[in-house]
Length: 214
Image (cartoon, rainbow, N blue to C red):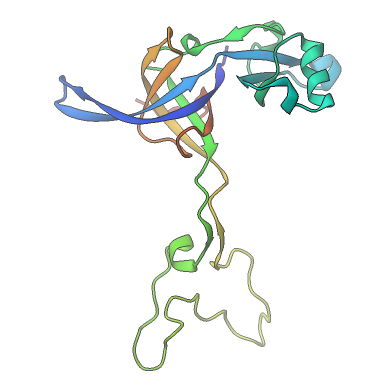
């Protein structure tokens, strides 16, 4: 059975591994508790999945459709809802609680989150382009994108051209991260390495889909 949970990024820390004499960077995630709000079935929806809720929300902040959705499941209103297609989802029941101990030390997982927003950025920061030369009349546009190509053919800019624009605030998934420690009492999971998003950002932890060969 595959596993998944919603969490909140707390921040980064490190531990010392005496076996290898190396410092291991860790990201601490407050994982759960999550409640099963809805269950999708092949008979009713054409596929099997569960919808998990995370983080309490005051009732006055929820609109009527949201209140009705949680009232149908007879669970408290949650701030974050995410759906997961898990093997064995049909065996889970609405109202079931998932905690950090769903995962164990040594598990290999994929962590998804929303990257930090950088706003409108130029092509150097956004696409790692190089600057133009700063002599012989190239300024003041030495940080611009440069030539767009010929005018007569193809008479357009190809899709995917490295141009300035909005940077960040997009879903990013980091694969094959190892869970180093699980604190079931405080619902904390320590993941080796960095994960997307700022502090207090919402992340999802799922079983890896492309496990590296040993």
